Image (spheres, rainbow, N blue to C red):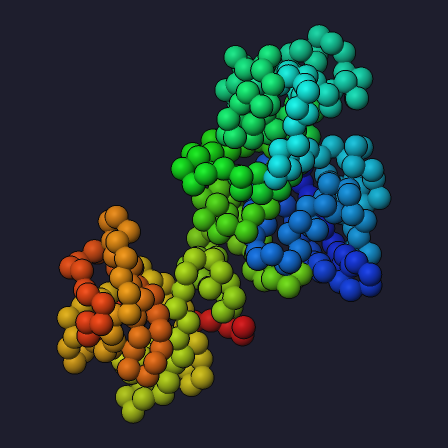
Length: 347
């Protein structure tokens, strides 16, 4: 497999169940060798998109091309995609080796090549010594790696991952993120990773496709989605964000009653996003926006606050610089750098 294979093009796609569209994409291109995460809340169309790419769901309209070939109506077993399910779906009565061989046997791959491919796939996921074990004899992380190896052993042009980390505990999920990304870089297979976890999407991806209500809300690198969200939804879903109105003061725009400098003009009624890590909690003084601490939690290297300002606005703060711990019900001041304010478009 090389990075010259696996380019996916989606054009004019519409998918509906019972006449009601659940997914509509005018255009989406996934480059060969790219790791694309499809992110969004439940019901936004993520799993439907994966099912269309796998061939399990036929779109109402539109086309799906892989390396220029129209596969819209091609059966799942003939379109050269590999799918890893959320539940792994390993055959419990088969050893690891037999699980990996299954897809090769159905494709009538010769035994010598079959053995070589299985060895290579197990080496990739660091499970060469576990070939003769059964799935129930493996940990959750090992089962996940077997499921990935089983998908890769058929040498798919596109690897489809349906929330494969969701059944793992938090520590193992963080570990597996790194392993999965390193594995994808080594094999170079185009990968589409479906998740509702924004931390996974940001950590793993070359680009992220954020879906909302069956539409593509924003497409870009993890940095672009986090640092320059285009809408209120994107800002709030990809990382926590305080969504704050901009008012016109006597001397210019204000946020929470505090004068700010914003590029452009006409900010009356506009909204800005302010990430919690960019909010500084300080002693109450005249230059800071006054607020009261509602609750405080210790998060290791920083404190996390929920606060209420004088006008009733509630917001979150997790100052990156740490600082002293403010107590619940204590009056404080809030400051931020003006360049941390992210102007947003329509909701």
